Structure formats: C-alpha cells, structure tokens
Amino acid sequence: MTMSHGFPRGRAAIVGASTFGIGKCPGVSAVDMAAKASLLALADAGLSLSDVDAIYTTAPYEALGGMELAEYLGLTPKVTDCNRTGGSAFEVYVQQAALALDAGLIDCALIAYGSNPASSQAPSVGMSRSSGWEAPYKPMTPISFYALAASRHMHDYGTTREQLAEVAVAARQWAQLNPEAAVRDPLTVADVLGSRMVSDPLTVRDCCLFNDGAAAVVMVRADRARDCAKRPVPVLGAAHAVTHREISSMPDLTVTGAAISGPQAYAQAGVGPADMDLVMLYDAFTITPILFLEDLGFCPKGEGGRFVSGGRIAPGGDFALNTNGGGLSCVHPGMYGLFLLVEAVRQLRGEAGERQVKDVELALAHGNGGFLSSEATVILARG
Amino acid sequence: MTPILHPEAEWRAHLAEGRFMIQRSPSTGGHVFYPRIMEPGTGADDLEWVEASGQGVVHAVTVVRKKDPADSYNIVLVDLAEGPRLMSRVDGVGVDDVIIGMPVRASIISQGDAPLLVFVPA
Image (cartoon, rainbow over all chains, first blue to last red):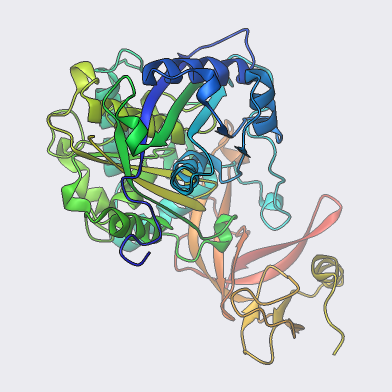
C-alpha cells in the first residue's frame, strides 16, 4: 500500500470515451444526452450495455441521477454513484471506479454526464442552497467567488488582467483547431480586456461557456482492457482534496486543494509534473488554470500569470494545455470535468486531428468543483 | 457554561440587538466565524460568545458591475482582528475605492427588514 500510495497504479484503464451534443442540443432531456454519450463510449470500447455493472453520473438537475440513469439504461448496477463534488465529480469517479475494479467489486464502470442548459428551461446545477453568510451581500454565483480569488492573486503576485486574458485567447486558438468546439471566432487579448466587466477583475470573456454537451468514459481492469477495440489508457493515479464549500472559508485564496491532490496523484503514478506531455485543467474562469499550474507544480506559486504569457499555452507554444478549447471555448454544460478526461484520452490515442500534440505518453486531467472547493487530479498514460 | 446549540439563531438574535458576536473556545483560544457547534479542526465544543472587536482588514475585493454604474456594488472578504475571515461589503466609500489591505470596522445596518453586518473604512 505504501508503495502505491493507496492507488492501484495502472491496474484499471479507460477503454472508451465519447462526447455528444456539444454546443446546442435542443429538444431532449439531460438523461437522453447522458445515455447517448454512454452508448457512444461503449461502442468506442467495443463493449455493450450489458457489460456495464457500475454507473457513476452526476445529473445536472436531478439529485437521484444515478438511479435515473440506471433505470433509463435498463441496468441493475452493483455500484451506483451520483456524487456532489461539482465539476470535479468525474475525476473522483475515476478514482472510485479504479478502486472498485481492482477490488473485483465490479468489472465495467460507466462514467457519464449530459446537460443542455443552453436549450432547456430546466434549472441547471440548482441543488445547492445559498449561504446565509454570503447571500446577503449578493455575490454573482459563482463568478464573484472566483473574482475574489483572482483579486488576491493579483495583489500578492502582480498577476495582470492581460495574463488572465492570455488564458482565454489560448483556449480560443485551440478551439479553432477543434471542429467540435462551440465557439471558434477569433479572440484577442484586447477583445477580452474590452469586453463587459462582470465581477472585477473578470469580464464576460474570462468566464466559461454555459452551453450544451454530454460525455462518457468506460473503465475496465487492465487485463481485460487489452481485448477492447482501441488502445487502452491506464490510470496511473487519482487523488482528491476538499478544502471548503464557501469562498470565505477557503484556507488561502491563492492556494487550492490541487496542491494536495496533485502531489498525491504524482506519488501514486511515480511521475512528476515535468513528465506530462498534455495538461487538462478545469478552466471555469481564466484564473483557475493559473492557480492549478502553480499548485500542480508546473511553476512556482505566484508565477502562473507569467507562465501563461507570450502564447506559451496556445497552439505552437511549448506547453500543451486544454487542447480541446476548454470550458472557455469548447464546452461547459454546468459541469465540465468529464470533458477533460475525454480530451486526454483522445490525445493519448492520437485521435485529436489538427490539434494533436506530438507523442503524448502522459497526461494530467484536473477537475475543480464548487468555488475552488473540490480538487481532483487524474494521471493517465498511453497504453 | 450552556453549550451553544442554535449557533445561527443566537448570532442573529445578537445582531438584531446591535451586537456583532463571534465564538471563542476557552480551551484552544481560537475564534470561530461563521457560528457553529464546534471549532473547525479541533472539534472543541466549549465555544462561547464574545463581542468582536469589529476591527478588520480587506483581504480580497470584487465589484459586481450592473448596467447602470450607480447600481454596481462591492463584495469583500474581511480578515477580522481575531482571525476569522468573512464575506461582507464596505459602505461609505466609492465602489472603485475599496482596496486590499484597507483597514475597516464593523457596522450593523438595516437591509430590507433585517439587520446586516457591513464594514466602513476604519
């Protein structure tokens, strides 16, 4: 146990991955979308619905979403989970599924999500009560909470609005290489700086999309993975940390739980940040990848703004980050964490087309939930 | 010492009487806000109410921008002199003039029908 830091390194793998309905997906329910993505991921793996004996899903507006998807698919899973760690839920599911697979509790895990807030009247992610200690001051949820963290990072480390804007611009340039990405028109730093201020220092272009999309991945044990349709993607590490719920209780506004989950995941995997060929970081707002780059060890604390400058994280730069266009320019249907994993799988398999990064052997996907509250890091390898 | 069993209700009752109270654990010496039945981290459940000094420093700030600039307002996180951090607003200063590091002091005002804890420049 000590050697593996509690995780069954490489003993489970992602064998199927899919996206569906990115952008606009009107006229259907969220569970229709999750089910469609599930079938696509199973087909990608060369498996069938009857192989699935575990369902991990976080429904956008149904607290009983795990039961809902099991019923819809017509399955009787041995494990059903619908956890509430926000956008990080899907990275947490990879951890939990790997453990359950390795223990022999289950044989095939389906992780799925669908939501169409841009096309549907249903309230999205509306199951969290507002805080009696924060709501009276009328913060814009969740933008103001991330804005407060950004304000402190700028104060402590001299991070600039131009550096924040670079994150949005790089995401857009990657999106322009991804036919699936929802927003692909040109964007400059000046455009971001000149766009409508929402909650200082974040403009509307510093904020992620709120559009439609579904995704799914399928996991099995590594031995069985060899018989699947495509090259498997072994899970080398998966770790999770929760530090707070409300932003006023965040222990340090400039240090996230990624500073805990990241080192644990590296230790499980036996690799470090310098070994990563692709990094997928939850970009709900332009400040979040800057914080995670620091906390995950890609640069020292406080250097994230300078790290992303000068096109370094854009196509052609020397650091491949968020190559699908991210939540900022590809897709963010309320919760985005599963799309990070799907893009990592596609890059590791060499399926990423025009945006393919050369020789991706190790990838990191980092999910964020709540208000920098829940952080989960997954490390994946080329099989 | 009667244990605090209704932390939020007791805090709001104090506020309605014009007092900004926080909790303190005699055994650990720690101060706690928001009110709860135990000190986070230690589990100490000997919390008692003490009057906050009201002194604080702005730790982080954002301005929520509205179509009419007159409707824009600030939101801050304030570090209390006793240690805890909380969300609030700084009144009595221009919306763009609230800066990190600014000393502030607590003030209880009425918003709607309810008392509200805000801060003003110290």
